[in-house]
Amino acid sequence: MVLIFVGALLLLHNYRGLDIRTVLGHWWPLILIVWGAVKLYERTAASRSGDPGSARITAGEVFLVLGLLALMGIVVGGEIINGKLRGRDIGVDWGEKHDYDLDVAPKPVPADARITIRNTHGDISVHSSDDSEIRVSGKKYAQSWSEKDADHLAAPVTFEVVQNGDGYEIHPSGANSSDSRVSFDLDVTVPKKASLTVRNERGDVTVADLAKPVTINTTNGDVEVRDITGDVTIDTRKGDVKVSDTKGNVKLSGHGGEVNVSGVSGGLTLDGEFYGPIRADKVAKGVRFISQRTDLTLAQLTGHMEAGSGNLEIADAPGNLTLRTNSYNVSIENASGKVKVDNRNGDVDVRFSAPPKEDIEINNASASITLSLPESSSFDMLANCHSGDINNEFHADSLKQTSTESGDSHLEGKYGSGRGPKITLKTSYGSISLHKTSSDMPEPLPKPAPAPSVKPAPPAPPRVKAPAAPKPEEN
Image 1 (tube, rainbow, N blue to C red):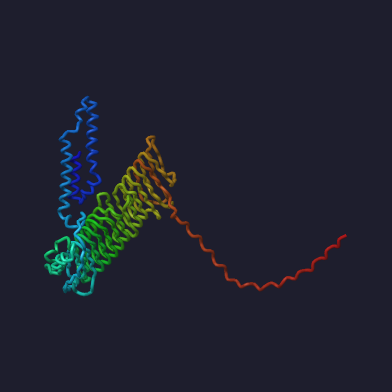
Image 2: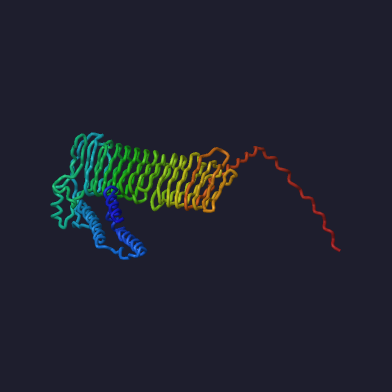
């Protein structure tokens, strides 16, 4: 079991981008727990067989565990040496940071040029211009304990713009350009119709106001893209991503933290593991979200979607919706197309403000299902609940509910006067609840007809009071 665990861990580290240092830091005691559980089982089995000494911990087992820990330590050390030592991830202090101005001559290029920007350490900001040229400005930094050494590091390093085939590349050059003590913050201006590719190892990337496709590859740093007419493709390994107001498709892959995508005229594809909240708003051509935990397809998103902290919320998604996930509390509101949800270990709550017209299928396990529909809905119902109850607010003679002695519940039949969609609900060790929504608003009362225009009658003559009768004299 220990061998299988370590082998799977190393395999995930190699092919799924798993950070083995984080896993070891939190989960290494599992090796001891598994080992102890195995020995406890062996001791119990040996006691029953009359040979308690057969469950002793042998020297070979001790060396096996120590060897596995050493193997993982070697992997971690190799990761640190292989590129990590060049950065500040492991707390290397290179001294004070000294800044210098970048002096790069403008480069005339075609208006629709293909441009690639490469950087090692530092932020990159790209914006557009109507001029057919590339302009690069910004700062270069050198870390050193003395100003003289910093000058020596920074002097031979600069950025250059060179033609590479039918494209143009912006990259650092000079004797110390690969030294991690030297970094660059770039402010780059390119033609508005240029196709852009940005490759950055460490630092934030911002791109705005371009009319052609944008591709960004970054290892460590936040990414922000806005006002792009073409497609946007982002591959990241660590950092937050924000995309807004784009006309083309958006594809985001890799690993990272928080994701915010809004105002996309095309479609959105998320393929990877992102551990911060994932938010998407107003995606015209739908959302495709693929991770180890979730497989989601939305035909369209006029509202918002948010995933994080054990909750997955979708609101106002016209068209079909297909979701397969686990350990999420799922909330879906106003999905006008077909709905198919497969979940486990998390509640599913689906609400409609208008009677549904397409089929609904919800499968869950070890959690509940709640479906809320307008009272005016018509549907064919088939609901099965293993070891749980069905709470139904829709009562009709054609809708029959039964239960068994073992605790299973079943609901089947038709509700409503018209022809409605088929609703299939299935869960285990949780309840099924069918609620009536309060969205069926009563029809407004007709406004009273305006009173006919009638001329006012002439005023009546004033009344004259008759003289009061004299009071009788008292005796």
